[in-house]
Image (cartoon, rainbow, N blue to C red):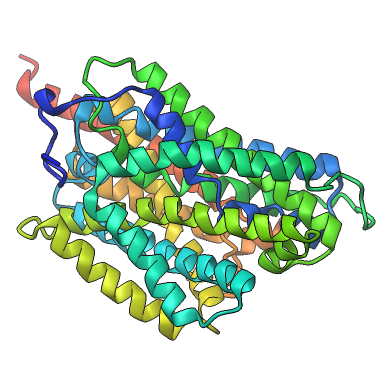
Length: 424
């Protein structure tokens, strides 16, 4: 298709309907990653009320962030990392690199998990399955933006029907098979996990709204992006919770397969198919992010290069690496919220794009949030320890970076005005 790289999309090439944002984000979240979040309540013995509260509130805030970034696409006509470059200027290569690696990492993790779903069903060797499964996703990403939207539109219907059938006829319920203790710590972990999962889409968001005509309603883009991502994510996480309390198995894939007969096969099949839609987005946006660094290279060459690297890592790390790598990805995702705070502050409140202030605000937001972090086995921040191990660093870094950027930018603007109009 025309102009499917990092170039700003001219108005004459703009097309599409804001409703496409609903089908894209609805289908993208019908997958294993958010299904697995539904098993966190079982780990902490949370009651139904606490479980639903953590899932709904965390996803609500995360979907809000995704929708805010998605609504930037029609006005700017740019990928999310090129919009970021408007704010961070020369230092943006750092964030393009972070995003490229993060999206590539999620591609690898989902590639492994999707392969596990397939071999769980068919009991065949993992290497040919992984390669064929990955090539399908690579081909979709190769054809680009329009084909991804078409695929997600199909998947939103097909997978929606599959998961609806499972939900209604899967003999699942909220009957508790364990004794809930309503741990505030568990609620905090669930809330943070649900938020972190959905908010991690933010650095991708305008990649898929940039082709919309500039005159479309940003409010509609926001609403469709929000509802699509929110509804499917909450649904699949609650479905995962129902499977967890039925099987009492913390292994989400094994639990999915245990769900009585062909329903187990149906769940595993739906999750494997959902991985295709999700990973097509991951590998496509990863190539766009690296393309923002290596502007002289064609996106297709970058796409093939990162795909080869991801296949090698996935094969090597299949048996004992993906869980560690998932922890690494969560650690890497700590950059997203202070970055998001600066981008939103600049887009809504300031619009100056001062690179020094942008980078300083990011560093301050990230630095202040470190004591609030608790990324699993890697380390535990002192403030997080005081509140029982709950990680609230995402919210701290977002608020601090946004506030810092607004205050420093206003001070800079006032100083510039003072220099331009000195007092007599």
